[in-house]
Image (cartoon, rainbow, N blue to C red; front, side, top):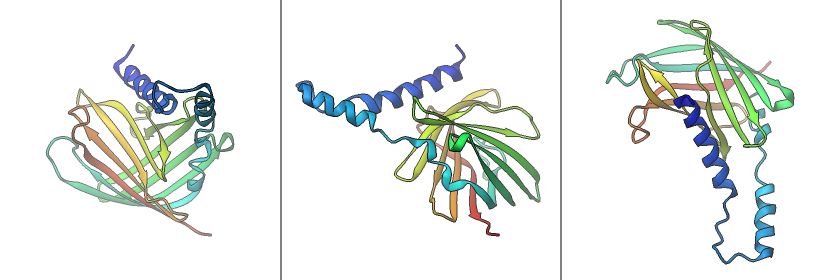
Length: 199
């Protein structure tokens, strides 16, 4: 099994265990077990978590040019992001088009909801490469989405963290960070702020 598949499987299993293991101790009664089972069944169904983002957005993007090299050179872009609902919200398609002094970025993200794991996978492609990058997996809690995965940068396996935060009806923030030390430290390399465009 490829390393990225092992990591993704591990993330999903840990997420499922965290939501399923009761924390009430070993002396749990039958009634307690039933309550715990009912509580696990009532776990948040996140298939509508991206509904807030459906529509057209003005995007301001900052990108670190050479991640994990010690460089702190950033480039700026502006443009639009269009998010379309698929499968009644259980998936969505994101089209990003931004440009700046360093050129143009055309990105596409396919987000898919797994109803069994109650988690999303985020799959990104850049028109310059034409292939999907390895997905990041995660979910929303308390109005914040956190997604983790693994990919390769300059021949080295690294961890990826993608965070969606500061969510309001008319704005939200996206941040990507890389780690090459197993998650002990993270270096942010992509920050985007979206503001909803009104007709």
